[in-house]
Image (cartoon, rainbow over all chains, first blue to last red; front, side, top):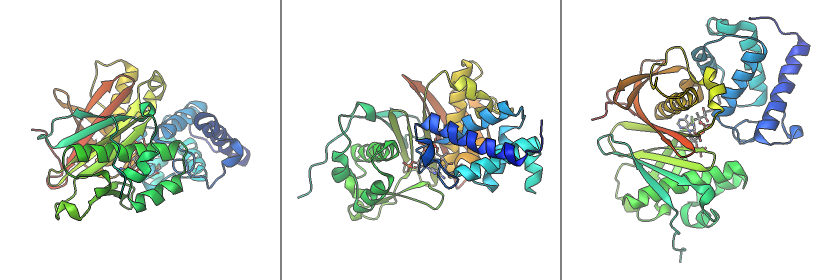
Length: 103
Length: 238
Ligand SMILES: CC(C)(COP(=O)(O)OP(=O)(O)OC[C@H]1O[C@@H](n2cnc3c(N)ncnc32)[C@H](O)[C@@H]1OP(=O)(O)O)[C@@H](O)C(=O)NCCC(=O)NCCS
């Protein structure tokens, strides 16, 4: 269900992403910041993005078609941890509406 | 004198597209060491790029993918030695091959790379106007959990596979097609896979471009190759 995230929830999302990347990619947590590049700096790949999407769709009970997420990523490429956090805020807050929000 | 290039155990796989797509698989975890290849397989520019990536997993995968492609080109006689070609990239990260002067002005093949787990895979074609893409992923039960993100409502192919394998097959086809088109992850997410005929699938991008692809399930991996004809905006297998 789309909803508005408070600043505190946004911080939680950001921290959750950092922890998730640290666990999945075996990288120390303190080396992951908003400017860290997921593929180039952390050795991540496209699967880590799929799993992140899955994680947050489940956690926030958001139903959004993957094609809509693809369209969103085309407009807002998410190379860094900070960009990923912003994408998750948008997906959670707008759900399937993220595509209309692009126009 | 430059050292004699060591040959790596790269396996050739075959996907039929007018006999013009060569796919090679390299189990680099089984290779004793990749370090020799830095001097025998890489050009100066490639060496500098590798230095920037470091010696961790990312650097190792990057190097393995270049070994895989260059060995495949040497074995097919396109180049005499791995250092006779260089793998650069375009502004979107798509790999771009350039051949040394020994190639006598022949247009370089189009190529694609992927690495996943212990494997690297390369694909190339010299069919004019055809762009290739390739993707490999470890085969694992985790694909069952990734299914909701990898498979969309528009996907209509490989119905008989187990859910985890189906998700891996559809996703590798989408990524391979996105690499052929150069659209990356965003393009893969916003595409649909449909059955064309037999084992051939059609991958439809959001902008209407159609690629064709085949997938293969091996011991521990799932891979797919896709091709797109920039001249006809779609490319059919013969
Ligand atoms: C291309 C992409 C889908 C790769 O998928 P992956 O599963 O992570 O990694 P793979 O091992 O299968 O493929 C990596 C190879 O794809 C190739 N590649 C990268 N960008 C590409 C593009 N736009 N088109 C075609 N091929 C590309 C590269 O050769 C790369 O290997 P290298 O780094 O050794 O040169 C993904 O990295 C991507 O979308 N990159 C574009 C920019 C980006 O970082 N986007 C972030 C999300 S929006």
